[in-house]
Length: 404
Image 1 (spheres, rainbow, N blue to C red):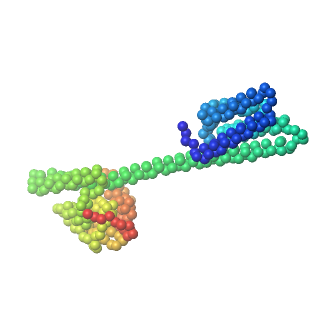
Image 2 (image 1 turned 60 degrees about the horizontal axis):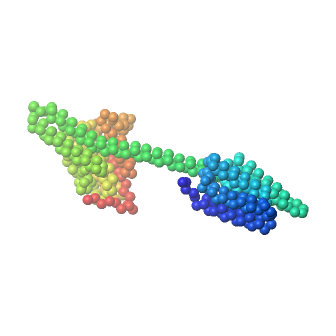
Image 3 (image 1 turned 180 degrees about the horizontal axis):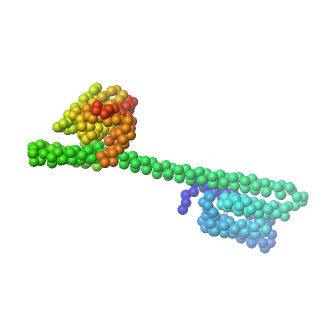
């Protein structure tokens, strides 16, 4: 059962009340003026049949939805009740104005190519009936008034019908547009989530595996000549494996860096610098300013960028020293990762492009910084080292999340 809007229910109630008022007054007028002889019983029966057909119409032959073609049952009901009214009109001219509800039913449910001819036929029958029973001189209103009223009613209802059709088209377009927009947003969300997952995997598992491979390769080279150094390399690889496992579990749980679990950002960066320091590379951490509470998203972004930058230093820079510098200001927090390695030409097109064989690198860092509302810059010259800087503004009028 389709839901009927309240406006349609109120309009139908008004039409039904008008029909029964007109039907009652027509029958009363027939009994007082038009009845005569044996036809009184037949006319009374026709009034009863006419009323019964009208009452059963909404149940046996409901009107079609606006904008849809009328059903065969509804057309059959409309034809039956109209035929009964025509016979009733021939026997009792007092039933003339019962045509108004029929006129509304036809115009409301039928397309204009059918409803307008039906209105013309019913109006012509009304005029003929009025003229037939007229006494004395012909009153021009009997000929002019019914077509005028019918024309106004027809014009109004057809206009409302066409306006409703246009509104339905606009609503359908709006619904389709909203559905397309929702699908586009879902696709954009999926792509953004894939990019985020790729960055998380690159900054955690991929970097850990890369370090493990380098340490195990180093252990293999000195396995016979320097067993102690080989065992040290294997031990460090085992430590990295443990950290990678912790990151993977945290990654599955809530995608937050394990180093920030119960620690502030400066503490996590200091621990990162200590872990990355080893034979051939010394990493130091510096803190400038007072490190106040920062949003978790900003802390995770800066820590991940630091991890990615140090991974690039370890794998590509051939540096002997690197420094992490966290600078905390009232309206901004920034992180600088500097090394004394071989450097590169930042103007080269390949400098910012993702390396399909090794990872995302600088593009992933830029995406992370942009997602947190910050910016990332890279300064480097061949033979003179590299500085990676990220700055994230802090919204002062928004309460920031406390750090455990």
